[in-house]
Length: 453
Image (cartoon, rainbow, N blue to C red):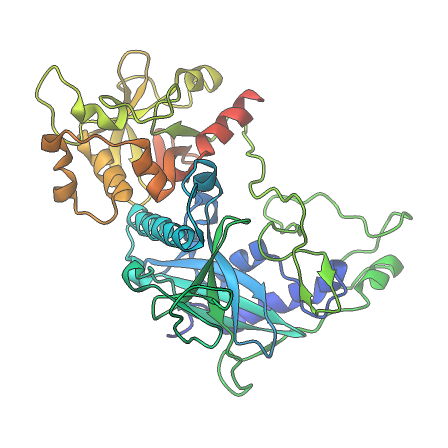
């Protein structure tokens, strides 16, 4: 497959950042923060940033290609490297893996990952079969770009293999992972993540996209102390020990250690970055502006933590009169109106709502107590919601829920890793809003951040 970004631009942007590695570690493998690599890919590909949407995709490249951006360290002599491709902390906390053995846990993780990936693709209106991983593989003094399909796992043909790829007749201590004939996977019960083996194939220097030489400035700390690095870092004005970092202005890069696969604490004897056992906050605190530019709305009842059987997204299942499938709404908890007065337009005042897949619908706040967010026509919003909740079915098949009287439950939301939506104001454009899906537990995080709990 051809490279999805401008290679020359990518290298020009990468080299100066990698040269600063000695600010963070003495390791000979360049340290490049995963968040910077996401920015790097966006700038070199012209892709749209979706890293903040809590989805399987960090970017949507031109041509509606979903992209997962990763960076990790490899050995020049290695053949592959297992890296995280999905995390299931919220699902595990909810009991999704309780009582499962190793084989069952892997299959459950793959089932959840497939459902989430398919759902995310539908939410963005893209073809999951065209999704890719963009990886920056870093090694001693260099790096290389690797891209491959972000495939759904064929759950029906999974089989255990040893480190040479040979099929095992039973799972035992020699099991290297499980393969579907295309990729190899593992599930880490302790970290609650699904891991995939990424190949390490170092191309010849003459090949396009070969090794990228990344020299590290070993004198940078001393240069900063002695007067700065020309064109990069101004002279230090403090006599204190170590460089003084000025607060970052909006739009600037801030170097910070991510909670992903890299960690600044290293074991130089091994020559690679090693995450050591420590408490790592995988989700940074949510920051709420006042006045806010977004709110998060649950797709379930906050009293019971279940999807209401005859209201909310299941209003079509209510009695009293003949109902149409898709006659439903997104609940608006009353405290949101009190905490953020005026964020949403007044009741029955129409506004423009752009969905995650680019569809624009007419929406309004409805019902007594301003408790409902609906579209007009009513089923336009729910068509998008329902197809993302049931990614394997057409909308015509989904509509069978009405005659079957089969309302949605919280388990349906948990399967695709989405139980709430984010409604954001479009800056500078009154009565224009956007809606995207959020992950499990994001409504509670929003509630806690907004109310100071």
